[in-house]
Image (cartoon, rainbow, N blue to C red):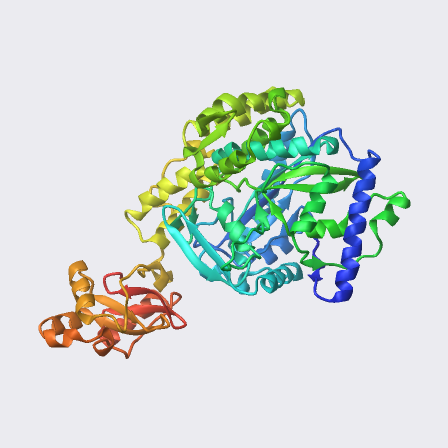
Length: 616
């Protein structure tokens, strides 16, 4: 959980006070390291569960603040959007049945959330990116009304000084601008924490980086965004771009993204790692400070390093280093941020156990990994996993191996050894790691989702297919089936209520358009070739300005002289339009009353689709 009482770092007096606190925090951190104050044993694990809240129609809700108030439990906290919440699980000592105990608490807290959500006719869903999220839900009206989020949004916009660009290309492509950080809210993660030895920081952190690719490949669960098939774990690209403070320029930009994997192996101490973060990234927010860290140390108290925590909280490494205090003793842990939520709590705990097991089971042959593996191979492995999931190949131990081979022949045996070395109960290890093995031999969440979506699109429009997909995911999650045994959707998991349909549920987003100065002859021929009955016409600003219809085609094809002019002279300018939120019944009545067969769908002056009598 981040600091909630924050403000933008803009006034000079705030900057002076904050920088003083930040430098004192680093001084205190170095003092604690030099004096061996960091806790080493017992090793503890922890986790944060982010989850989605959806309406009965499987689209995002806006009731997270109400649900959170009803839950009234300190384990829960808000997230960026009004359709996400987070659970902070209690840390446990890494031994015996700790993973089962963590799993039990997670299920109990989710049941509590479900009970409160039901009062507002909403449901709890675990998924890396909610498939039914659309641009409507990425506007500021869906931002949680807490100062922290609005301040962070404004701070990032102030630095960037222009809209944020989102461009992700996979099987399909998303390419758009947005003016808030709300796209970050599409991402829901299962963040796993592992306490590490501060004295062995660099080697341990580098090992976490080295193993990230294969771990991500089996956990991938986020292939869809805005109805498009993108990466197997689209969260990696989406999160990177959604809070990017770097504006596009004509100059090669060597600056590092605030969300990232890193650019090299780390070296030195924890303090050196944090110093590097201060050098590389501008501080964005501050808060009120009552005292400084060195004063607290002199009084016998362990400081929370609040200024450093604020800075670290706006830098989103996929393996993030976190400082904490338990019983007045400092500790440090790695937060694994790249594993997505879902598909089930069983799958999530299995992912976490695989990661923790491989972290603790590092063979001696892989010590000083920075001397034995090129960092760009580790980074390449990570992004290959994000793009291709279980279809990725990895550079591992000097060879190019399939994900299946790396996981089955190297990581699973390593995980068992690591878990047993920490005293984890064999029945716990076998139970959860067998889930991973079964998934390797079948499919992960991402592959299941892609195959299901493609099957549904054979019979349904994209919005309906997405709703049925989410309904199916919910049904399987409620039965606690792990994803390796999930069957593809039947299609009857959700029956679309006709009276609730809107234009966006039936409109065509892909349609032939032309511009006013285009050749009339060419455009009309194109309509004939493709049997297109309606072509929206755009002006030089790419705003909708007219419509060319099948009637125009028939009239002018028989009058070749008129075809030598531009489209602007032939098109209909007096248009009746609708928005994507217009009820479908109303659109149907508009077409009937005006004796037309097509309505352009607009957002302001921009064309976003078209709906015809055939679509109805």
